[in-house]
Length: 421
Image 1 (tube, rainbow, N blue to C red):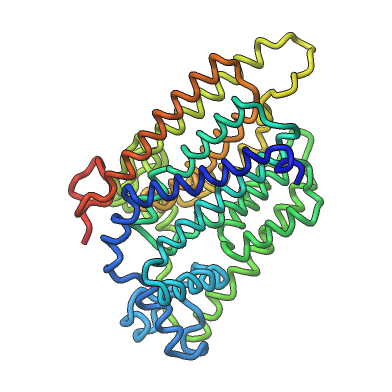
Image 2 (image 1 turned 135 degrees about the vertical axis):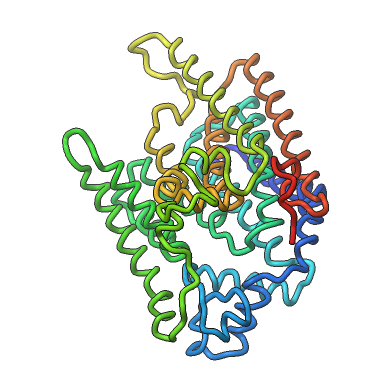
């Protein structure tokens, strides 16, 4: 790869930064936070996968079971794709052979590495020449900022071990990048969309809906976007239907949440009142600064980029080194489309499970922050952003370190009554 050849030192430092950050986060709080909940029964490790191993496919259909009683009473959960469950089953087998690598720990490592990996891929396609010292420094610091995000690590340590969002976001981001780079007709983007549907059919359907919205133009529909949307929707249906159909064929009652409940159209205000509150004040409290700090950082970053762009003489081409993300609204839109579409269609789910859905909001924020630094800042800006990033990294590490608090889910959560069972 040309980028790696031109930036050998940076590429090595990028890998080293990711590995060291993961190690620091693990030792500061993630390991202990994960170990505190490791003894609690998990629906995959303690119920679903043992049932798979003890019974024939004709009895379990590769479905998910919340308990042994549910299996005995013919109650199953069928919203996960079979391919994703096979991936989790592989992690389960690793845990059975290596007790020091529980599913949630191994899964968290692979998920955050996939995020760092796709971000490096984007950099390699956006930066043609050798990175300047200032560029490389800010990118590396922003990658550490991204990899240390406390919301991801706390969620991985405390909550659903079978959360698909961190893994499938890599597919979402790849699809967004390839579509943005005008490769709508290439086999690469089609392959990514299909793989996306294989591992998360519902997410692929949301991507299809987002593409349909983007296809709407003042002069009519964008046929290429409509074609991609059709691929995403057809693949989503094709890979989603097998699980519920098998569940019905085997006589299982569904334990899936209904559409009206997830959308907040059931009229119940126990968990949800409106879309705005589902994002800002969810039913399950989490420290607001964990999402506010990165978002404010991105807003400030974009404001500075806009100021730089305004200072350029009118009619003069942008100089080499200008941010590669200025004006790429499609890329931003597709990056954030999973969270936007989920909030639009299932806001009550977002309100109940912020520890799951926050990642779909924060991962795009961090990717945008990293890529926005792929330009040459002035010396003053370099020092300013480096100092701000160091403060933000310190904030992240403090939050992760506090996550090992006994008997709590989130450190410093708004509602101290939320305790572990």
